[in-house]
Image 1 (tube, rainbow, N blue to C red):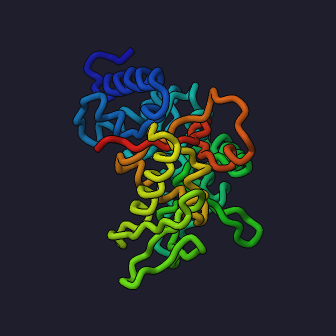
Image 2 (cartoon, rainbow, N blue to C red):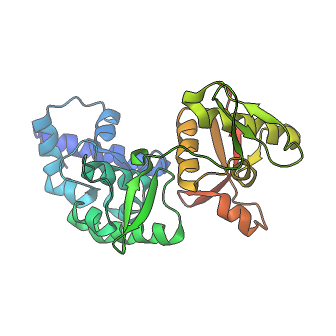
Length: 282
């Protein structure tokens, strides 16, 4: 209980109440960042006051903050330490935090070393498991460097020109895609070279959806087959379209008898296999 006149203690208790409310909502509302928590509390307190509240021993015992006093740091209740450790929010935050112009890939041990002490072991264990289970967030990839697995944000990945048997050039120099399957002879010319993936993906989606009865429900198995490119690049570009609100992904959970091909094509996110794509109404 906050003592009368102790504004920092009062703020700390208010933050705890909002944190508990968010925890009941679960992903993607929780875990969240310190800054977001302050917004939910509708408190425009001075930085010194916020630091005092966060530094309260009673507050620190009940929460886990990923890194120091950063407002961008993820925060969760201490009882939800494992959920925070395995969250996409934390992994992306740590990769952005350590990111420099000359170093953009880090091992799980390097990331762990920069998190708060009580979170370190659970975080490293969660990251290693996600690598082994191929369940990293779609925004994160990894590569082996000197026998060590290094993680990086796909946004930092620089790609060369992508070419394959499924891509041809028109006389104008604009790329086009040749759809595979029954209508393999149909070439789809592109008109937006600056947004190549979005154009190709949209046309492939339309063709596959039409073949499937126009239910706005297309499998990633078919889309990956139509757009033969590196998985990391495909997933990164699809994520951009999702963030832009153009497409959504549906879970494959509850669908019995998934084939190995379907499991391989699906995207693991927050413990769910996302396999089916739908176009959103803009």
